[in-house]
Amino acid sequence: MSPAGAGFDLPTPELAARCAEVTAQHRDDGSCYELLRRALAERHDDAWEAVYRQYERLVRAWVVRHPGYAALTPPNDDAEHLANTIFTRFWQNLPPERFPEFPTVAALMAFLRRCTNSVVIEATRKVARRARREQRLERAEILASDPPEMPALSQEARAHLWTLARAAAQDERDLVVLELSYRNDLRPAAIAAQRPDLFPDVTEVYRCKRNLLDRLRRNPEMVALAQEALS
Image 1: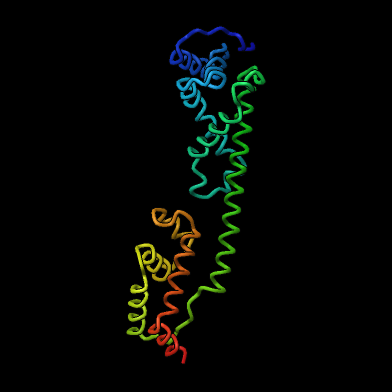
Image 2 (image 1 turned 180 degrees about the vertical axis):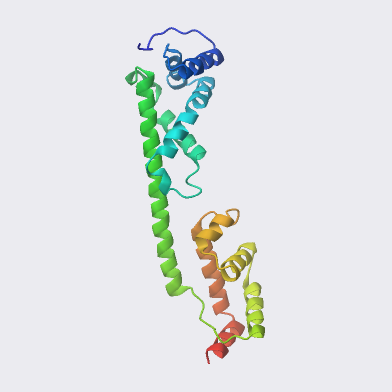
């Protein structure tokens, strides 16, 4: 049956409970459509919250079954966050004046699924762009920012080098980069993933590392140590 004009006059909490009940029974008595109408056509906050609760698990299932989901990496693979984005897009792209274009729950769910598809595809493209950017940054770092090789350093000289490096550090971010990059041999992407409180983006790790290396290159003691090791 078409739920349009079903004429439900229940309070929203009771309407939402009825929608959940008939959905579990695989029936359609118009209650879910009325709930969606209140949420989208009348913009009632309580109805929208009920719609989110009713369909959030369905949307998350669509997300994890999407072919592009397997390509996502943290934090972009957070299905709950993606679901929030999908519902936001659903709300924004279906204003009250468009609601009559969707005369059934099935039509509204099809539109919600299209929103799911577009959000997951955009997330995969974002991951791909980030990967390409990281590759460019890594190439630039290899060409411009790697310190000189100093294979002949004695244990005493290595300790002195580490003292110079720590002295060149200006804040906690520099110290973390020193520890994780040069002692633990972590790549910048891994550092950003491990310390998002200090580095909201991998580009910040590269910037911090470059600045630290530039300061070390300008340090006369560091220059002398490098020249001694390479002589």
